[in-house]
Image (cartoon, rainbow, N blue to C red; front, side):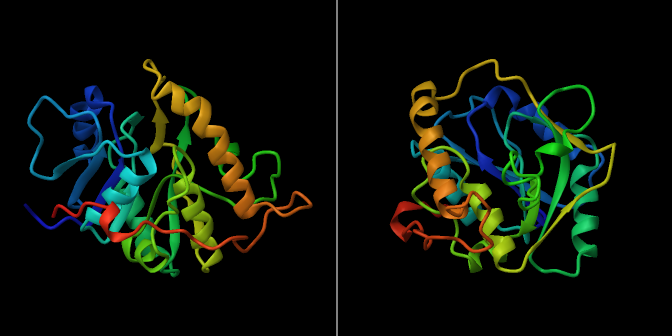
Amino acid sequence: MQKPVVSIIAPAINIEYWQELYTMLCAGNSIPFEIVYCGYNRPNFALPENFIYIHSEAKPPQCFETVWRNAIGEFLFIVTDDLVVPPGTIDTLYVYMMRMQNERAIVSARFSDRLEGPAQDNLFCFDLANPRSPVLGCATMTRRKVWEELGGLDRRFNLLWSDTDMQMRILEAGGHPFIMPSENHIVRERPHIRPRLIGDLKKGKPLDKVLLESLWINSDGSTSKNRLDALQPYVANEIPIVR
């Protein structure tokens, strides 16, 4: 296998989409890539050599920490397994990433949570109620070494927003967001036909939102430029390294 330049990462359990998603990611792209997914749902079919699955019963953010720690590409591209990715998206993101003068750049595809229609550019901010809050991306590409330098994800998240916190920390460290201005590379989210971890969604989603806001929202409701509490990272024995 050719050494990957880009590692596509995410916690993942929607195995019914994996083969189609792999075909999408191959289409129109020449940059060597790998997929590193982690979750509790084992695929019942053979995976390509550059598609690495790590079994884990851990919570989604811990699976997220597992995939980036096991990734070997210079760049991390976050693609959850419920997304539809247009041809050439990896190559185009990579081109923009290489143009950025900032080593801590966050380059994002445009995004929609619908399978048709225009991109929802209004979603690209930390606080939808505050349009002056920092620009954040969906389906982002960053350098792996930046995640390593910043210590990885915060272990307190149980379900969502650990990667949002990471984006905010990259910006805090001098990073720069860039949304790829392409109508041809809108990444789209599939409709959720199967509720995922319903009990955790009911309990974990609100708690994770409270945690995220406690880390970045000032008492006056404004978004802080600096994180309001120290990172609580995962420790070595919590994360399996399989490669």
